[in-house]
Length: 190
Ligand SMILES: Cc1cc2nc3c(=O)[nH]c(=O)nc-3n(C[C@H](O)[C@H](O)[C@H](O)COP(=O)(O)O)c2cc1C
Image (cartoon, rainbow, N blue to C red; front, top):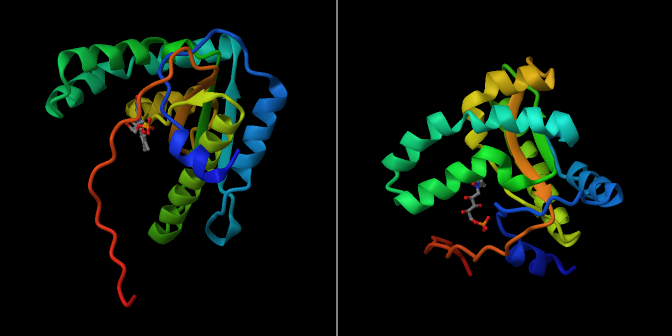
């Protein structure tokens, strides 16, 4: 798949079919994620891929984030229908059979910590684009980070920082592309 096609066509998917994605496809997605650039090539990240009972336990924990999320959505002015959709999605992560969590190392130096976060984000975007190229849907999620402490405990990664999670699987419904806002791009000296 052409890189520009992948970038423009990737969407956040919130409804999934129950079929398991092929393990080989997941392997390729994880490999592509791990080829992301990282500050001082530290690669200070970990990926946890969950299916079956581990996935179910993880999703049950994540669903508890709705308690924190709902007031934020109200504050942001998200209409009731939208809030209901988000709540439903968080309850079972859209039924995705696989969930991926990315954690990063903590660094006492603020500059290095910033690099770790940005490196993790590069890994995450690689993962999303590669999944799209494999015909799989994903949804970058930080909404579950309200439960970071509990999630890290479940993952056995108490000394790390939770970057984000994503469900991954075959999409059950192609979502519309949310419009992009006007942006400032300055070309100086041309
Ligand atoms: C850092 C980050 C955090 C996000 N967290 C959530 C989330 O917790 N729940 C959710 O449903 N979508 C989440 N999203 C997905 C965005 O809502 C989505 O990317 C945006 O609406 C644009 O839609 P698109 O991805 O289909 O282009 C997140 C995206 C990013 C980049």
